[in-house]
Image (tube, rainbow, N blue to C red; front, side, top):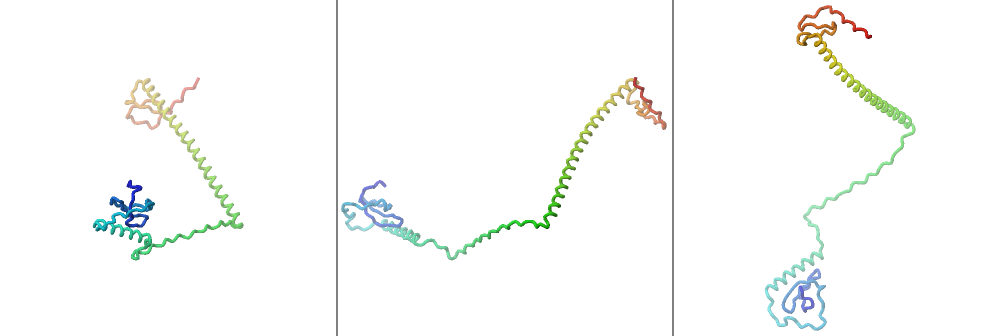
Length: 207
């Protein structure tokens, strides 16, 4: 407030270390009692002439008194639960489960268990080995199939080329004649094939 060192009088002391003070010029304020100090020299009584208090002062004093009483009640009487409110449900903590201690396998059943587990592991290993062999055979078969199909395409292209050369050498057309593979001769298209076909001539001997 900027009134440090000025004389004032305490009108009302409130709760929470507060006080309502009045200065020489009539200015009033609520401040902390830690900011108040007793004057060393005698202080003349302010407003010594009796006068009728202002109505607003009475209202302010009444409001301040009610506020101080409410604060005092809240500090003196802690908050209590409303009797009409339902009681809070009690949360029960689950009982802590104790871990069971491990128990050893009886000696009488230990050997049979070992044998059964060993046989099971052996069967699983055999299955794994057979599966690996099957995958290897399958890969090899696929590789051989790819090679055979490539050879078949190459041979089919060679047959078609040889037939073209044969038609060209004989001066015939495919639309008119077809090649009899067994008799190694040209037969007209649409002709009835003979019942007894001549055997195919043997290839000439290599010199």
